[in-house]
Length: 290
Image (cartoon, rainbow, N blue to C red; front, side, top):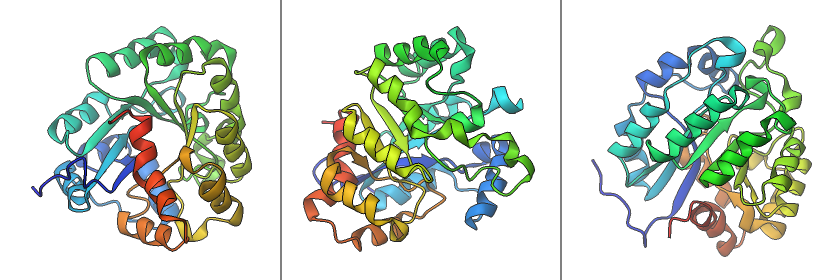
């Protein structure tokens, strides 16, 4: 095990990391194969200890996100207890987020509460409305968002195009319209203390995501899942000049390697103070790590 970075020499917090250990692959075989084919990446097992050392070596921390589509597909999801166990094993590196099915009502509320109070997780996500089959602004879910607000949990939503199911017949049943960022606007307006993250640049609705982050003080963007060399002018302008305090670094590992993402991000030519906000300080503020 390599030595962990201290608070003063930490250089970045990767907001969006998926597990790729044996247990995670066991629970996510169908979607992992589809995503790997779309991005042209391998599906090799990477033990959690090895993943932790990858971040330690780079003086970084990482947020592990979970995912589910049990209601829509009947497939069991990776238990939140597994994420919590890995965080407990590597508290110097990892923060963890649990996953729920918001449409399950009281059961969803109970699991969210368990994630916070028993498992020590910092949020709920990655919620994927397209895969899970719900509209985020459905009024029937308002109580659930209120519960997350009460628990002071961060909530992370997938935004935009879905790699899972891409190119397959029916796209694995995923309905992209539920991933429109503007559907999060009602939640942000009705629950102003709920810290919301819209993940990815959210193509083909990128402008909606940027407007949402600029307008709502409780909405952040993570710019994971896209290689920075493909960021368009609008995105670079917003993250560099208009909302640098609302943007979070994320790789969507293993979709993108840490070194590739950081290397291409540095080539955007953003001011050093903006880079530091995006890579580190905004996540520190969001998760109240200080």
